[in-house]
Image (cartoon, rainbow, N blue to C red; front, side, top):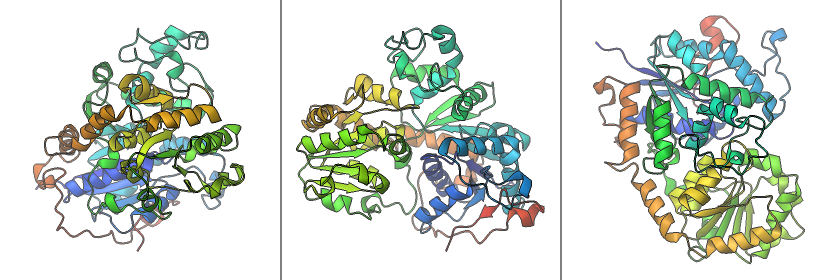
Amino acid sequence: MAAVPHVVVITFPFASHAVKLFRLARALAAAAPAATFSFLSTAGSIAQLQEKNQDALEGNLRFVEVPDGLMSPSSGGAAPVPPPNHMARLGLFIAAAEAGGVKVALETARIAAGGVRVTCVVGDAFVWMAAEAAAGVGAPWVPVWTGGPSALLAHLQGDALRDDIGDKAASRADELLTAHPGLGSYCVRDLPDGCVFGEMHLPIVALFRRVADQLLVPRAATAVALNTFPGLLPDDVTAALAAELPEVLPIGPFHLLPVPGDDSANAADPHGCLAWLNGHPARAVAYASFGTVVTAVVGGQEELRELAAGLEASGTPFLWSLPKEYWPLLPAGFLDLERAKVVPWAPQAAVLRHASVGGFVTHAGWASVLEGVAGGVPMACRPFFSDQRMNARMVAHVWGFGTVFEQAMTRGTVSATVSWLLAGDQATRMQEMRDMAATAFAADGGSRKNFDKLLKIVCPSPQEHSRGGLQVDEAAEVTRCAPATTHAQLLGASSLAHTVAPQK
């Protein structure tokens, strides 16, 4: 009798990575109901996912904790270290994962699954050490890149870019990268931080280089899954990625991956954003959001006030998703504007699909860009770091349905740009892109076919996914995992990693 597949999905527990990987894990678990799935993340990340998904979780999917690096080694794991800043937390997680945290979590997952060995590791590419952990248990490794594919290509070509540009990034900032396959539409200044410029000492820079090195190891990865869909990327980018990597599987947009019980039409909307949008004509509202991490970077700066002044000066109704701690920075009386709605959180994908939204002011994070594409909404991009500059250039100069703030936003540039977005000159092109995204998961859609290829890799026995990939049996009963045994009980060690059952 064939062994039951046990697929481990491990995420990078920062920014929006966990949300994307968890949706992929849910889609895989629903498509392979006879297989066992373990989702690995840190305690804090898991708690957030449980809170948002406790009412609908596949019965063959369980959570397993991995070390976050916040426990004090000298105290035997009993005393937590006070939470440091974001970059320090990232460094601690990487150090803990490199020190064996991923390997320990794989063993914990195996024991919690009744001794069923791990047969495949699907991992966020940022957790590069999962490759060695997978090899250690004899399982294939399938990395997942959730960000902009062009940024991935830049990291893969990092050595060649550094040899070419050296220390002349500033003087060559506006030079197109025509000598590098797939990067000819981008300038030197568009490259991700740490590639040829930036704060090279930061942990994230070392992480990107280790990720690229690991992905380039021959036969280390069985396939690489991307958060995009066939036809979205320029042909030269697609060809260059295929030349650098093993089988490339575009299976996005991740936010459109079908999962049981997903009711996008009735998305959680605690602040009444969709009801407010219902009161406006088609393509009449501007939506602004810069994500949690980026808002923390720019929230205390004058640029946020300029954005507020520009939105007001545009004369356009607008919805702005802005964490509440930054509201005191807004101009006096701003929150009382009749044509404005400022909320601490918005159901962004649903907002961008709403007919009233005609423009999106964004930091150009890849998930936000894909949600804009899927909603058919033109974008004004103000990139700050990571892949955002490359994403913004793709929106404005490659696809041609948006624009980029080349410098810090000002009242005048925001006002003029919002008015331009809502004029609707990009509507035809955006409709084409929206239709492409909508059909990606149709019966013969490109992402659907690639998802089924991925499913055959992670669950190679046909009988283990007899429902036919993304064809979910809606009548099947969805149950929750029973409370799981802790790592300390299982291995007699500290609970650096332990399984966590969905909360009742």
